[in-house]
Length: 237
Ligand SMILES: [Zn+2]
Ligand SMILES: [Zn+2]
Image (cartoon, rainbow, N blue to C red; front, side):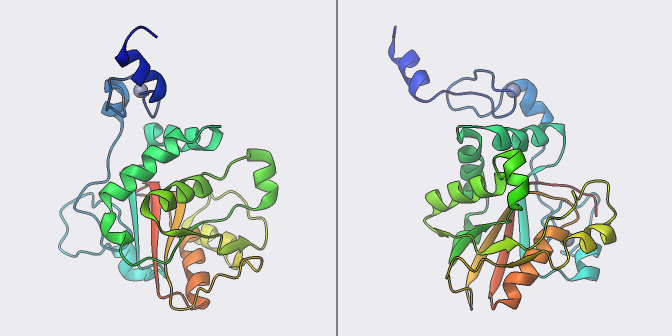
């Protein structure tokens, strides 16, 4: 080891969260990837956390106004595009949890106010057959890292009762039907959900059907408040 900088770099490798190339100390993205990433920024819908595409009078988007979701709010750090998709892919395939750790830090820094009086952080569960194929559920990993740095208890509150089709290429109503009744209380854990405030974690919010279904299940079990956190969200409703 030639010098201190090399040593520090060896202990704390600074690498781009997207392409994995080496970056200067303290940076999270290389300039190229940084130019491709879009952070979710105000003004956003108070409920679903999606950015408004044009100036907006109401604080709530039409979609939330009409559908009245079961979750109380949802927030994401990135807009979903090719760059943020790679971040999610990195979390899925990673044997180390570097990407998840950094994302958890970003989420906590950005949305610290959400973590105030929370009892549990819980992931949207994957069906076990899918885990056999894929290995990691990114929601589990990010939820676990968030729990470590926020000191909120990590718990598997829900389980999938059946295997659902992939949500991509489905319309809003098809997505909602696909996940309808797909979750229930994880009976192997005895955490009391009644009157609890819960943070529900998933990788991407698209139509919000999956998060909404999970939130509905948690509320039916007596949850008081459900906030959803995702790595990215889309403008597609
Ligand atoms: Zn990069
Ligand atoms: Zn909304």
